[in-house]
Image 1 (cartoon, helix red, strand yellow):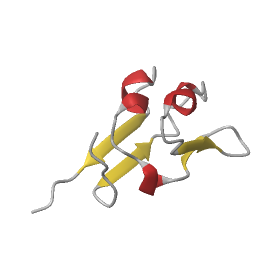
Image 2: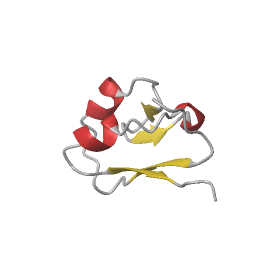
Image 3: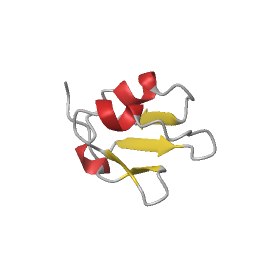
Length: 71
């Protein structure tokens, strides 16, 4: 996998998230964590490798990975 840092944005839609924890369990780099209310937050965005596992496994489509290309 290619490591993507400053060009990757992990977006979590808290209105759609039901706090199931699937994304937390499967993120290989532990980019996501839950806050004191159980909501998913992007704790370590610089660690994201844009594998999109969280995006694919989220049953509520609450996570979106955006990767911009250098121009």
